[in-house]
Length: 468
Image (cartoon, rainbow, N blue to C red; front, side, top):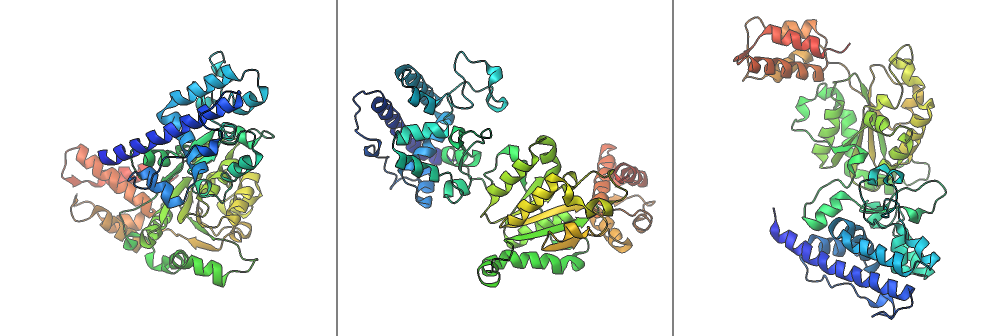
């Protein structure tokens, strides 16, 4: 643990919190007719961070943030590191301005906060166990702008998609119910930003765990991909896009009729290397790859699939990332819904959720790869929605033999009854399935405390892992 970084962060955040406390006290005094130390919030200057070595100060300087953005950041951070400050503010606000209905309605109670006499069952499930004050957009506007409409409008611009804090998803407002003002949403800061500003831990992802995304990487190389020669050209096109996308967008495809970004379809039976290929593209080009499990998204967000897919794409907008949408079968229909896979995907984009997702994908300005466990060529209605479709076929006999040899390697002893060539010829398995069988057989041998893998270990693995 870097204690020096933590010390610098703690020192600067403590100064920022003192600044926030002064703003809160001044606003409450101004609102209730008491004599404040400062005649206006603008007169309360934020602490100087010019010589600071903290990660927080570096972020402020690197993004060119002014007092308003710094105020929003420390207000969002406060519940995590000094919750009593905001609890005290809410208590004072409630006691001192109880008769000032306009002020009270603007500051609380915010969504996610519970008053002492409130029923916890009435609170949103996500915050039911939090009894402290959580600031909302209205809290921020009240404290920073008061009745000044110009300042209010300037603060609102911070939550526009073009602002760095919103574009990079460092800061945002929670969604509200339809018809409710946007500023009623809770003020949120990403977990990654909070870790950076406190412990100094830098992480690549700013996404919440709820978004079911995970970085995708691989220790393998291009030679480990089945059909590497056959896939060289289409995967090379994707790499060329990543290396030249600015020129492609600004010079070659500047016309208004060109779709933004690059949308790619990976299709083929399960275990044929689609996920590995996405990871290898990122590895070769130095671009971060994030995997989104669409089956988990659709099961977790029943009734909210479309909204959350939209939010995933919005949060990744303008980032130099590869989005890999895996398990897309969950969004494009059930395996049992039609006679065969080809029919199923011919009209896949007729369902409301899949149709909207494809529309969102068309407007996405980055690289998005959709993976389908589909053996046949996708129907034209789906095929036309992508710039590039890459087929990952099942490996042939010679390729399966190579997979068996490479998988066991030279360090694993095989019983004399194990004939890898016979296994490759008689069992039409994908590369992923072969790797699973090898792992299964090796673990069985280790469990028996044996130094060699028997044929029965392999055959049991095939039965266990072979698709239905």
